[in-house]
Picture 1 (cartoon, rainbow, N blue to C red):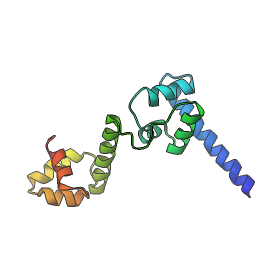
Picture 2: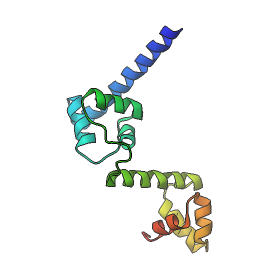
Picture 3: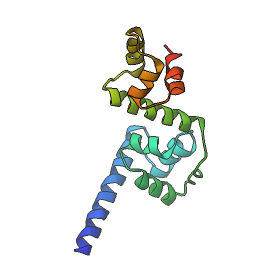
Length: 138
């Protein structure tokens, strides 16, 4: 039983690594280490967005980066790209919460209907300043 589990994990890991190789190839990288370095080390992206871009989990990506000698950024290292990625994820989550593909349009339409910032914030599960910040872009 334990042997079967180990083999299953190994199979899933190799399939995930193959997805990375294929994703890197589609981006013009024939060498895994060079491709990972270009996508992670040479541009300001985080583990989570890059893992999603490559179609693998964060753990698989961390292992591959380490295996290929690419230093992981320390936890808490806050890059502009990391902040932007988190903001984008937060906006996507808020949009899903109210069932819209376009949060900014949804906000604009609700304001035209007379919704207050407090009501918008409650509907989105966010704060009033968060909503106000998105409203200034409209």
